[in-house]
Image (cartoon, rainbow over all chains, first blue to last red; front, side):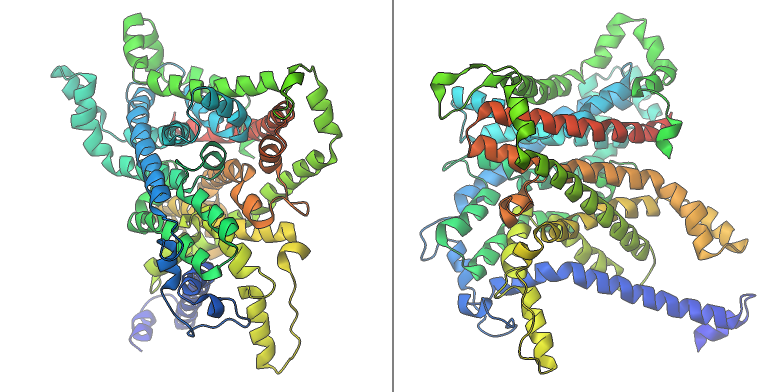
Length: 292
Length: 321
């Protein structure tokens, strides 16, 4: 009623306003419908993980019957003797270490591509991006052979190096656009005061670009945590990561649907938590910092 | 469209840009202090990505099967001719193209619709956005397992379970129970990848929408522009480079997809794409020479995509300089 009274005083006709409002409600509902639809498979995974094996594998599906935490207990090694901790720790090591390395390499590089740009900086940018277009499989065999000769097969530090190379190009692109935002006056003032590169980076660039650094770190972490191909080919018993453990979980124990879903949920949790917590940074980061 | 306006190689763009950079080139010492922060990243990338590829290139001309170590040597083009005569490789090239095109186009379109919906104010927008992001955050290996076992499974998957439930509502005794993974394997892989990549496209396009100058849109509305006209003449042109960026990044990742093909079908029933085929030749066939030749072919295919994509992206720089 109130809405109608307000709109009546405006030049726009009452009927178009009301139908516009109805459209807005319908579009909101449509958005909700899509949201639920896209969330459904994940919700189904969580629900299945909470069922007993017999209740999980029924047709039509059971929703509330046979709920148990047995799948999670078994994922954490109860009754199977297979501990998920070594692969989880491997994944954490590889993701965190490579993310740190990515930041360490990409921030100075981005500095040289934006704040005091080198000649032909666009060419360098394209070189970085073009390495993303060299498919991972194209270098897999030599890397495997070199690792074999160097005794680095099944070594988590090999993955750290490879994940760094996987995420560095995107990180350079993202960091460059974030650093381009740092006010030039600040930098000039600092260098007149005699600050060196390290001081400028730590004292001036880092604080201003912090949200961008966080976004870069987040995306690098997600892609490293999720990687499967390199981990599968180059690791084995000792250095296997969580995704490798997950795929092996099915083949070595036959199919236990609830337990596999519990494992899938557990392994996805770190990325889900990080991603939900930093949605805005994720948006900004994925557009390679192109949002002003 | 933007590619037609860019006439040359990316380097031409840079030559005309940055007069300051050219001035610095006159002072060699200054140039080196500029380059120094860049070098660690550059050297690292060259050593870790370019050198292995050179290795792949060399091995692709060798006879080298790990199961037959005595017969190692120069093989000329034999690996390439063998690769081209292999019908499996030809079909995997086809699969890669189909898979990438379908997944990127559909998820780009869906992502655009979702971004436009989310750009409006409505009750619970934050919750809907969180729900929509979820597929992108679930570990790909986990989501592939989820689709294979909990959704597509013919006897207890969610799809057939829902069919059974719907049929029982109307008293039907014999609901259809298709085996999704064997009757429509490629479509099944594509559906799971579209689910996974639509949020990625949506996030990029949403960022684009939110960076749109709102006063221009309001001015247009005051002048009586319809919703469609605002989209066609204001939103879409602004969004174009975000669409291009989303398509570029999406294709880079989807072309290289391994997890879904490996987990869902193990490359069976015509779903083996190039990365999976290379993996199989190398990891199961132990034919290093052949695998390398296939790897080189993958690169040649991607270069075609890359040339197009790089020219497209250089519009990002043109706008800046």
